[in-house]
Image 1: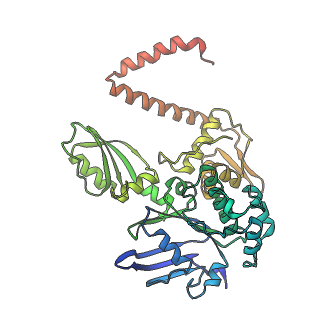
Image 2 (image 1 turned 60 degrees about the vertical axis):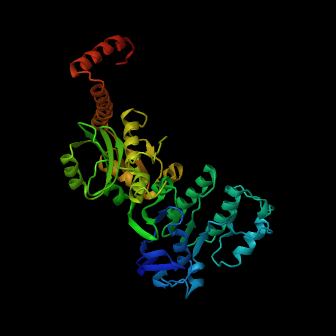
Amino acid sequence: MNDAILPSVIEISGLSRKFGDKLVLNQVSLQVPRGRVFGLVGANGAGKTTLIKHILGLLKAESGSVRVLGFDPVADPVAVLSRTGFLSENRDLPPWMRVDELLRYTRSFYPRWDSGYAEELRRQFGLEGTTKIKHLSRGENAKAGLLLALAFRPDLLLLDEPSSGLDPLVRRDILEAIIRTVADEGRTVFFSTHLMDEVERVADDIAMMFDGRVALEGSLEEIKRDHHRLVLRFDAPPAAVPKVPGVLSIAGSGREWTVICNGSRPEAVAAMARLGGRVVAEETPSLDEIFVARAGGKIA
Amino acid sequence: MQLHISTGDGVPIYLQIAQQVKHLVASGRLAPGDELPPIRVLAQQLLVNPNTVARAYLELERDGVVVKRHGSGTYISEGGSPLARKEKLKILAQRADALLTEAGHLEVTLEDLLQLIQERYRSLQPYLNS
């Protein structure tokens, strides 16, 4: 297995999945390049967890294909799972075990387990070896799960909503772990979240999912460069919300309105000029604004 | 070196880092020869992607604010003064824009505004250094 010839760590093409009548994944295609942090963003129910289950080989592709580290995760689960550190959204650690027992138990599955690193992380995360899992707080439980996912130095770190329901201190530990993992040469991180702040901080590449589809994929830098936030001023307040073709969203009141648009900026500016609006400010929108604009009001 | 990253206002993070370092140089809080933290260290401290910090350092290097020394680190370059002046004016230009916009909203003319600045200068002059 020559790692150098692998084009991407995760390659998904044309993946669709139905649960009953509901199309949960609709022609999803993604490429996760090696050595980068990939952020998957979407509202609850957009299909993020279902997609991650396909990456782990817990679900078989109904149509389309999934390759992880060059393998089919359903046909060759050991090849994928032995190199993938996974932190699930449901903290499903065995409650009756002590932290030190859990570490010993888990290391037996991973030839590459690094006991020194595990011990360093245990101390850094403030976990006592003698504490039973069921007595850990929510944050400690997440940190224990993260420790297990990191301690064998996986090629791919896969995190499903790692920050959900956690306090800022634990979220900080998780972000630090992501940064540290990617700073180690060659490692790749894939994480899903609905917290745009985290994606904007740590992701190199992102994909936005809505209703089972990937609506936007690319490097964070490209995406931010291609989207514009324009503040418009009208000489007289428009009677209704101005209808401008080619913009993703428009909001405001009175004489001042804010528009989010992407590549079609010149057309949008021309159309707004015809309605009597002129651009008084132009800035790069935050990822949050892009997400909300793309969601088209579907997200509260 | 204390930097503050905000993700709410849309300014790309590498630009925030580069601009804040420039401000620190312009205000004299970073002096020629001072060393910037290694990319990994600053990335962990600010909780941002290491590639983003690398991008900011590259930007600063292109603008002549810092120099990379092989196998050693990134340092504030000597003779940053012409740029420092440019940066100082850039900071003030942002304030001036805000002031002019505010004056426009309040329907205060440019003449009145300039006169006000003169007046304020005269009354503050004893307290302004240099």
